[in-house]
Image 1 (cartoon, rainbow, N blue to C red):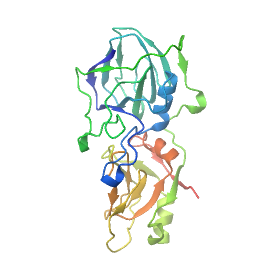
Image 2: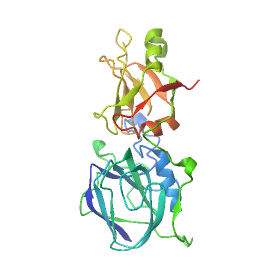
Image 3: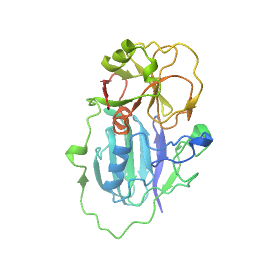
Image 4: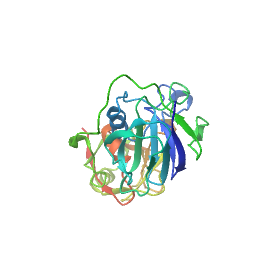
Length: 282
């Protein structure tokens, strides 16, 4: 059943789930939602499983028309919609759901009761346009939802306050020592941990470039080796790059650290200008 028509996509809109697992050895990144915490809560608010396909919106500008009355939820970044983040309610046919102005965070998640229907590739509905898997949504697209359950949802609901996040005030980001940690001079290790960092505007789903201190990478060449989501590589210019959901599966730069998955969910929502610091996870 068609439930939503895309009027505007804003700065980017796609269908994502928890990603495709087990294909990195073939060069296929996991993709999936940038902020699993917010995405899971959007799905829970409408009675879906955590991994049900939902919409991931970047910053602002997206606009949708509801085609069939259904229960929707919004979580993650706040972008000025009439249904606020961390909140679920039924939306009537013909109502417009718009995200005009970003206020906090980067990624907003929109879930619908029954989950959005999207074809699977390699076990996931996540779009990965760079690799020719799926595509970004376009104006005029119509999205369908799975069958509604018999569970009766009455009124509105919210995520518990303890689970709602203020993305302008991230906590210390936990980081594990990377495979090449010991190759960095102790002074560089201390600099990495003591400095304040922020995400560059030249960042995307492939990688987050960090701005702050300039690190001196170990001398000499390094063979390319597998990297995981959250790996912090240090290229020759000394500005670290965090591998994100659509990032490469191998890399040849030394890896000073690996972001803890829980902290990576926070980091994914850091807009340029929001400062954060690392804390050793050990």
